[in-house]
Image (cartoon, rainbow, N blue to C red; front, side, top):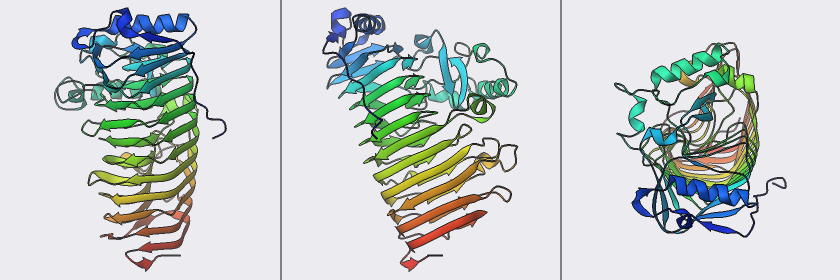
Amino acid sequence: MRRIRPPRFRDRWYDVTDFGAVGDDATDCTAAIRTAIETCHRHGGGHVVVPAGNFRTGAIHLLSRVDLHLAAGSRLAFSQDPAAYLPVVATRYEGTECYNYSPFVYAYGQRDIAVTGGGVLDGRADDTHWWDWTGGPPPNESPDKTLLIQMAADGVPVKERVFGAGHYLRPNLLQFNRCTNVLLDGITVKDSPMWNIHPVLCRNVTIRDVVVDSPNGPNNDGIDPESCTDVLIERCTISTGDDCIAFKSGKDADGRRVNVPTRYAVVRDCEMADGNGGVTAGSETSGGIMDIFVRDCTMSSPRLERAIRIKSNPDRGGTIANIDVRRVTVGQAADSVIEIVLNYANVTTGAYPPDVHGISISQLTAAAAPRALNLLGLPDDPLRDIRLYDCRFDAMSEENVIQDVEGLRLDQVWINGTRADN
């Protein structure tokens, strides 16, 4: 925590309406916002202000020393036209590097950047824009995903993995790539094409008082730090169509090529509702995920499948270790309260078995769920050193599933009123 400090900005303010932006929910403000950011950056930095109103825009690229400040009552309404996110930029798609449509708010290699204020970033994705790329007849992302994974496996240089126009890999709503000193504060994000907030290979990231309201879309993870160091996520409220917070570190061959873990992260005082997992590690674990601390969070929804989830498989590999969870209150979950599995996507054999050990969960309470624990290692790759202390699980309707686990310790753990210590 001593290392994590949000950036500071000069007391200079640049209103986008002074550069031609109009908040009438009709005018394309892309050029005006871009000019405001470039002017602020050129003059030494400060705050680019989006005032109250509805501002239509395409891709926004942040530059060093610039805070994009969304005033209360403001809304950035992002274009539903994929052409608004060209030319392609360097990005990661589900843990694999490539060139693709620009994330809606994007920065690459910048320092001291922020998106702050009480406004809304509305991705405007729906069943006929972006989300329809996930299945069924063309447009369909599946062939492009297969091609990208094969390119990575074959060692095709990243600069040759070019997608974008004519392809169907969905962009993130916010992605900061290889940036230092990043702040997201107070904003609301909603309806992203896929992952909402995605810091990649960043250092010193603060995400606080953010609302993620994106419960209906596919792969709509809330906050996904990937291959990042020194991350604080606090006082956020998250409801998504996938994992609420998911720590990641690259996928398969490409994750091993880059080989940068996510390490030293704190999640505290957050509230999770809908989602496949409340706080998750994986499934993109190839670079490793270590030293993650979760404190004082609440999680509950009929559509929250799991509270704490770790997922990988022998194709992904990586070390997942030193995960420490304390004082989590779970109201309702739709599947297992705690799930740690090494057979993600039904893959049980491969050359890169993950190393999962050192998982500690204490003072967790759950009011209702099908089961408390789903712990699945593999015969040749067991889960190791998992400890639950002072936890209570009530109204569990099914038995725990525990296979191929070494060093499981249950200490003062109660399930349906019965002490389950070993």
